Length: 391
Image (tube, rainbow, N blue to C red):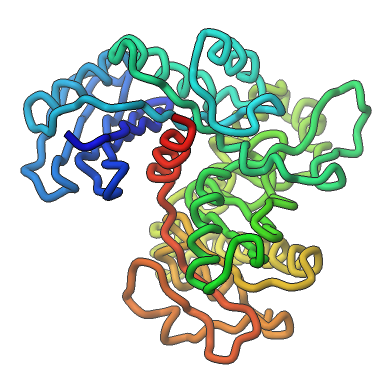
C-alpha cells in the first residue's frame, strides 16, 4: 500500500480532511464534516481523488469525537482503506516556541493549550482534532504544523510593537502554511529559487493577509498578535484604532470580550455590506447597493496600501501573488487591489485577468516590471509535506 498521510483541518464547527499519497501527491480521498454541535450536521466524502462515488450522511454530530468517528465510518463504507503513516494537523498559533512542525506528545498539547489566549477561536478546536485523532489512531505519529511558523524569520523591527515590554506581546503573523506553499510555487513559475525571489503574497479569503517575502523569508506581514489585524476580511475588521475598545466600553457599554467578538465575527465586509461573502457583496453592488460599493472600495483600498508599503520595504518586487478563494477567483478584486500602481511596475493584462480560468497563471501585462501571478494555495499538501519531512 502507498504511504499516505491523513491531513486534518479542524475548525470550531467543521473538520476538513484529505488523505494524500506522499509519493504521487494524489488525493486518495477528501471530505468535510459541517455543522458540528448543531441539530443537523452533514458529512460529504469522496474517494479516488474525487472521482469515486460520493458518500454523504446527515445527522447530528454533538462534538468532534463523533464527527471524526463519522469520517472513519465514511472511509470504511466508501473507501479507500485508511492506514495513514501519519496524521498532520493544522494548528493556528505556535507562539515563539513552535518555529517548525513538531511531533505531538503530551508536552506539545500542554504548550498549545497555554497559547489558547492568543488564538481563542482556533487553538482549542485544533487541539480537539489532535486529541480525537490520537485516540482513533494509537501509535500513528501525529504532527502539528503551525500557521505562525513561516513568520519565524520576521526581524525584530517588524514584530515589535511600541508598547510596554512587560506586556510580552508581539506580531506573529498567520496564513504561514499557505504562504510557504504559494511562495515556493511562485518562485518556480518565475524560474528562480526562493532565495532569489522577492514576493508580496496576498492571501484573500474569508480571512485575508498580505506578506512581504524577501529571498524566501517572511520579513513583514499584515496579521499581528492575532489574525484580526491587517486587511479587511469577511467578518474581521482588520486595522482599527486601539482606542476603539475604550470608546465602545464608554459609549456602548461593551466589555472587552464583547468588542473582540464583534471585531472578529460581526465586522469586515459583513458590517459594511451585510454579507461576508465576496460573491454576494459584488451581486449587491452590481444591483446598485451603495453600502456594497463602499465595502468593495474600502476592501481594495486597504490592500493597495499594504502592497505599496511592501513595495517600499522590499525595494525590488519580482511578483505580487494572489491566492485564497477571493484572490484566485475574483478578477475585480485583483484589478482593484492594483489599480493605479503602474508607477510601481505593476500592470495587469485586462484580458488575462478577466479570463474564465483556473489554476496557476500569469495575469500581468507583457513587459510589466513586476509579474502578477495567481497561485491556488494547497495548505493540505504543505501540511503533508512538512509532516513527511519531519518523519
